[in-house]
Picture 1 (cartoon, rainbow, N blue to C red):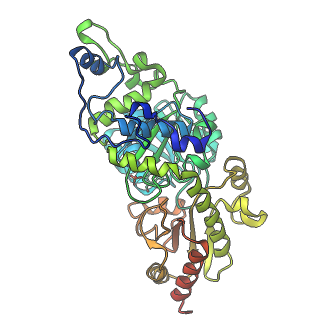
Picture 2 (picture 1 turned 90 degrees about the vertical axis):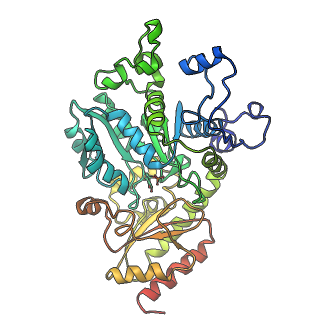
Picture 3 (picture 1 turned 90 degrees about the horizontal axis):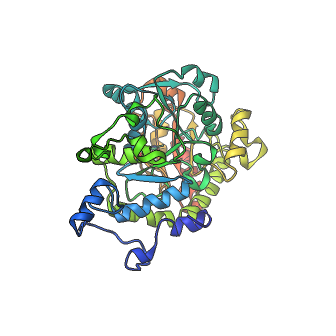
Amino acid sequence: MCGGFETNAVHGGYAASEHAHAGVPPIYMSAAFDMESAARGDALSAGTEDGFSYSRVANPTVDVLERRLAALEGGRSAVAVASGMAAVSFALLCAAEGGGRIIAPKTLYGASVDAMASFFPQFGVHTDFVERINDLDEVEALIGPDTRAVFAESVANPSTEVTDVAGLAELAHRYGVPLIIDNTVPTPYLFRPIRWGADVVVHSTTKGISGHGNTLGGVVVDAGRFDWGSPRFPQFTRTEVVVSDDRAGVWHSFASRFGADAYIRRLRIKYVRTFGAVESPFNAYLQLLGLETLPVRIRQQTRSATAIARHLRTLPHVRDVRYAGLALADPEGAAGQDARQAELVRRSFPDGVGGVLSFELDGDRVRIARVLDSVRVFTYIPNIGDSRSLIVDPARITHREVPADFRAAAGVTDNLIRLSIGLEDVEDLIADLDQAIARAYDEQ
Ligand SMILES: Cc1ncc(COP(=O)(O)O)c(C=O)c1O
């Protein structure tokens, strides 16, 4: 893909000449496609010719989205799926299926924690959770013969603590283990994990990538650099009928057949095709539309989030403002962050960490409920990355299914409020928070 990030956000992955010269990528609402001739049908099914035959495997609208997201993340290829959780689940299981172990921090998104701590073990995939993912000694001590991936979020939600992707990648690669990064919170506009050494990137495209709170989606982007052909990953080196030509007696594994594309092909052919969590063409269309404005939205949201974080720090009753981007805003902004975290933000996130921030309030649950009930511009919605500003109490909502010690590690106390900053006037957002907090303390 040629051109800069903002050009690719509008044009990446799309050639109008291949789609009846339509200016905007069309929505191909077709379950299946005419294979035209017996010879072409045979070639499409054998995978010796690229093309579309059935939308559970690939669809032209979804294909444009996949190419655009791969370009924006600096990856080799991508597979779009029906939600962020489908992306997280498929990416991790594809690496660790058949008895593998994953290393991950306790601060992950709630549903990822629940999946990895209590559900994936039912499929024989276990997770070794670390207290601090940036403590490379703690991570290294857990790497063993069954470790198949290190998994982390580039920016944690709701703390916004940033991960040392370069350090983790170097460590994981020393042991022949891939690094998988959930890059949902910053979006590729602010951070591209592959550039810092990650092998696989996942997103909930429901968030900043769509940007309007109107669709669900997920994506797995593959850098195409990791060697899945090593003995650590038997699922990639054993022969499989689905990638072989058994009539001709030609047998392949995913590694021998696809080389640098082994991981993404396996994810599509085994996971998406089997479990069927396919992205719909209509949702892909909405995400393509959202991507066109990604840079301008994220710039404004990051600017507003910084202004709001600074303002909140001046308010009575506000105990602790968590926004890693403060390390960029002013020298004292890093108060409360350790020096290493502030240095990491400055080095890897020069344009900021995005529109999510959180803060604690004095008092009990009643005060929190009053703030939630008193906001007028913010909406009480459990989502992030919307053009509307959103507010939520993570302990009761997004992290409800997370065990107490995991909530504590993520800083999710009962007094925590999370904001996702949208595109409204920042003065209106600040005034709304001021009046809601004043009401909560009977000061208005
Ligand atoms: C960091 C992160 N990863 C994954 C997900 C799951 O995404 P989805 O809701 O699209 O399944 C979320 C959702 O909030 C998230 O915040």
